[in-house]
Image (tube, rainbow, N blue to C red; front, side):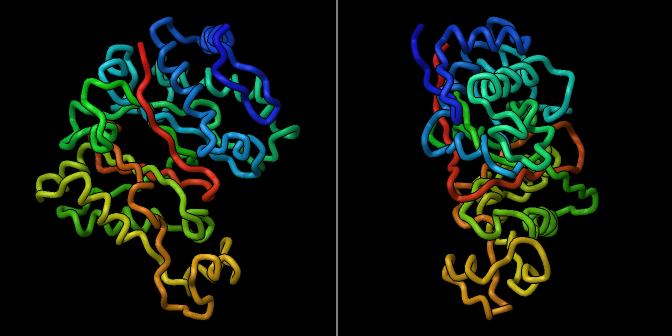
Length: 298
């Protein structure tokens, strides 16, 4: 009967029992429960703004990135197909969270939820990193956790957009292309200080590491390259003069560069997927949602 919290917007109470019931309905194995409990507490943190996401017209969802030995032990997938079907831990942990958002939170399309399309990521959104093939430390370790800590990072993002590059042989060209894919006239990232997840395949990550680039160096370089001139953004999408002014930008200055990622700490760079020349980009929501992370107990 221990209370985890109330699920917005309906305010249904989630106890440990409720979480366990939804985990069973989703098809979780018993050993997945610590992740589901940890994720439930995490998505209810005020800064993530789960209530806003439950009611928005957008189709973003809380993506769970799980690091640590427990993720490996329960079979969470970070390699080939990690965003797709076929892996019980990934599918059922994410599904348990979504069932609670529907059943306890009332986030049902056409009722509390105004989402226009929703998206596949609103069915399930959970993965780990491909640490066996990663040239860098994990996302959690990069944020000060120990390798033996079990950690969940959660960010509100759209479904992944795939960037294919089997031509680049050095980081500058590779990262320039990925940076361009991180920008889009219809992306909220262009006009708000928002989160974004970039999942580099081991092949793309290794190309950068072989050139002496650390995770942090790649992260900061992507932030520098993910820009568009304001005149380009004026052609379509959600540009408005008042949005430019709110960012301290003169709406008449066509040449000023607009960054997709205003704060490098809000770019969540991970290594995931199988071997191949592909990087996945998940654009974020607006500035009312800020990513959260924390360790969970077994």
